[in-house]
Image 1 (cartoon, one colour):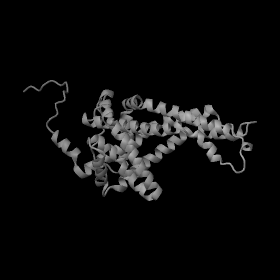
Image 2 (cartoon, helix red, strand yellow; image 1 turned 180 degrees about the vertical axis):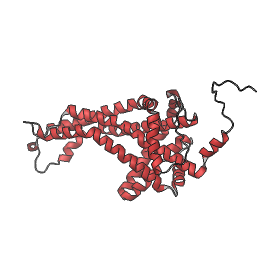
Image 3 (tube, rainbow, N blue to C red; image 1 turned 90 degrees about the vertical axis):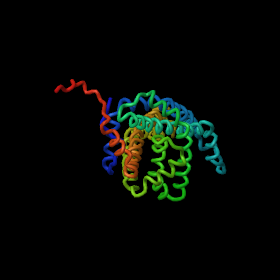
Image 4 (tube, helix red, strand yellow; image 1 turned 45 degrees about the horizontal axis):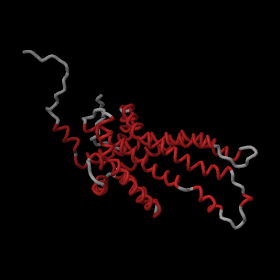
Length: 300
């Protein structure tokens, strides 16, 4: 089905945000289908390993006896035994899950553009995903390290690099390039247009954060309440509420589609301002429209 969202188009701040919602609305079913098909396994696996790790912590909290520790003992040393291989798996699957979501949404939009604003099939999206997944996964780890260093050094560099790094994956997938070129190209594209990109991305991130909190907060509050209000057992965490909170938190990651779509639109906006590729494509297509209108031929 053809839609009316033109990706290669110059947009201002408000249009980036509004078109992000519009693209998701008009591609809601096929986009969600691709999202759950290609990200579902990683989402379920993340819930499982998170639950295995949290179950150890829950057991430690629920069975904690302050009288069993001497005044000179280190409680942090006792707790460290509960952060083993499960904790490492949580980190690994978090990166895998993030890479799967990123490459799925961007691949969907890349195929959508390549088909002339036509809805892609899951097979077409899968062709992109299996080609770019490992590259995006490795690059996401490197970007996370760079952002962590920027955050530790000072919070200002973190916010400076945030919109620049958000452009790297769209460049890699849409232009079929490596990390090095995408890294340098992101700096080149955002030059003179930093604040529009930063503002659009930060707004959608805040929107997603608020929506995620609305979804997860009730269960989280109930779980925290059970920590102090459980009668007769002192501090006590509910395993069932913890599992439900973990699963609901992971399910809320579907909201991350919005900032990924916004980052792709930011890339197309900057690329159009710098290169004018979308305009050139439209000029080249003039006079080549062979669409069958099912109308009878004119007779003279």
